Image 1: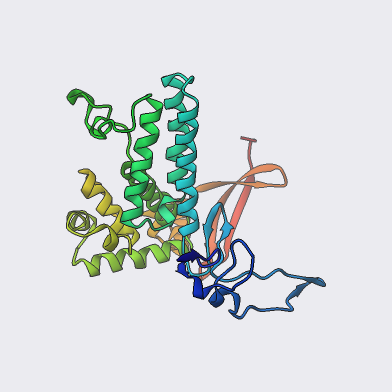
Image 2: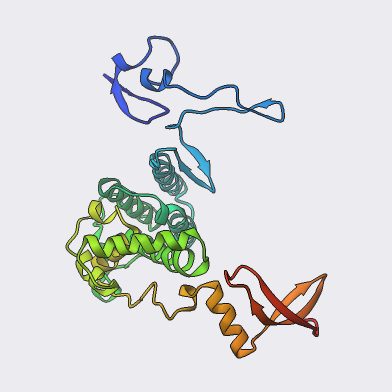
Amino acid sequence: MSSQCPICNKKKGNCHFPAHLTPTPPCLECQHTWKPAGIKYKGTDLGVIHGRAPIRLLGIWYNMWLDSTAQRRYVMDGITEIACFLRKNRDLSIENSLRLVECTLAPLLAFSGPVITWPEKEFKQLTAAFVRCNKEAWHMLPNTSTALFTFPPDQGGLQIKMPRAILCLAVWGHLIRSRCCQFDDGTRQLAVTTYKDALKKHGCLDMEDLQYEGEFITWDQASQNSFAFACHLTSTLGIKVSWDPFHPDRIASATNLELAQAMITTKHLVHIKHKDEWRRAQTMEVSAEGKRVTCDSKKATRL
């Protein structure tokens, strides 16, 4: 017999658990792991939890070992709950059931999909549960062929958006908007390193080569790198993305000093809000390290 530890989420034999009457006791390893104590903030003792215990940060369940098992279980439980709800409420029309599936399943997967790792086996189970929800929405029997949902309409299918397509869109959107273009911080620098590692590991020159190579690597191999995983998804879906994420001529690739020098040369005006009043400012000079800019502002009409 084996039980699952509520802290590390590992299944172990009964000899690894204490012999007392607690319904879900932690395993002996987690129970006797050292934890800091006596930490206070403004005289109040701070609570301490085990490093393998999942915590919710920005809506996603993780632990200190970057294990996202709790988040994957949360997504699966949500899909299962929707399937059970549709099964018990057959009085809902097909239109309302499909609208419920569209508004719940895709956002549930897309929210955490780009930042957690889905093992291939668990993702197949997720796909099966996703299809089951659509069968319930269409008031079909559980043994209805899955091909009906994957074939295009001209071949007699419904062609719903499967979890692989939802995850592909979410992963590429996360790379383009959040990690490569939106912020000029450590996230972008980490993305540059991740991209170079993907090219070096798979012997590619650019994103196009990486997408071609993504067709021949496995799901688990691609999951180790976010760029390789994105290219693997597009390759398996028959999609090609033309994108050079870190081209040196892009504005996002320019340093603050280069941008300031360009604004000085072109005499570009920027709008600045100061004391509830909009002003037009022109960059006049910039310090050598690019951390301080001197501007000449003129009062402007409110926008």
